[in-house]
Length: 463
Image 1 (spheres, rainbow, N blue to C red):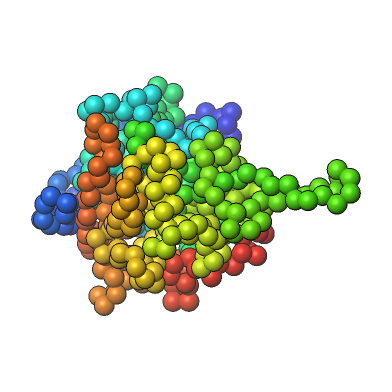
Image 2 (cartoon, one colour; image 1 turned 30 degrees about the horizontal axis):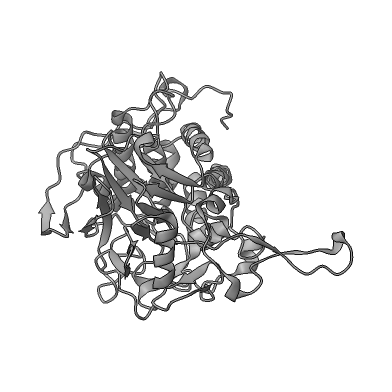
């Protein structure tokens, strides 16, 4: 396996390539329909695409280019339609996987818990920011979304709001593709370092990936190297930032807001050594956290704790809004918070922002949440208060892949476009699932698996 001191593998050092696809290969993007707040659905024709170069190799000079990432997209798309899952190593050899994950992890681990996307990141008067919700291994919808929104560029930023893996059949390819967009040609390890931001979702954890399919997907695709590949992905998950602030006006996080982590000393009996430290011992003592507390939280945990002193990561990744005022423990999930419109108002004022954009809830979760909007268009405005809005965006259409039927959800996915000068007026872009979706088998028992991450086995999360 590749270590940090070894040079990246190149074409000459890899085994012989899988033959290129024949000229009759399916188009890279299938026809889909899209809609925004200002237009109606209309079909998008599939453009002609060049054939991918297989296997993926690392550039001789170590410089990732747009052509390289384009070829990666083409290759993953072609392989999903023409190869079995176990043949993925012939497309993305383990040494190339190692180098990509290693270089991306170095970048991610250096980013703060909350990344600020502002003039220091290159955000300017001609910039737009695209915010993407859960994608859950639905590779072909992600490929379409990137094309529909326009690829990352000097003036087009992307914030991906977590849940890249699980449930869908191509979580690994989806995650690797997004890592490839996270780059810097100047350092030969990053393609768009300050243009693409990857935040963590609750499914980027050991517990969720062992239940909802990603672990089994990786083991099926990489066989004897599967445990190595899975372990490297988990290490990379730990480095994903928790939140972002866009243009000083918009807070984005997978689940939502978070509590104060102020430590409250309990009454001590006798002697200093007997004093105990407890965190918010009474639910009535819950209060909103500050940006300083978010930045100090320890995010490098495989499964964010639901008890103890490091609760902010669990809040950010697992919390849900409510139509009832107040801040309380999220008893339905067993981790995180429930917060009402009054807390949204207070949080907006506390951070001096206009929007909260979160994800975390698909149509399966929303049908169980009275008073909150459904996810048939891929987004909802959950709270509309004096200081701004709380929005949920979900970017996996026709979700979940192996459970959705004609009489079930058939939801659209959506992404949000934020534009200058203040980046605080959302433009919603809804889109339908790419069809036909390549045939694939599920990597988890979806018939017995709970739909919306409820009834968590907290004991398993602690192991």
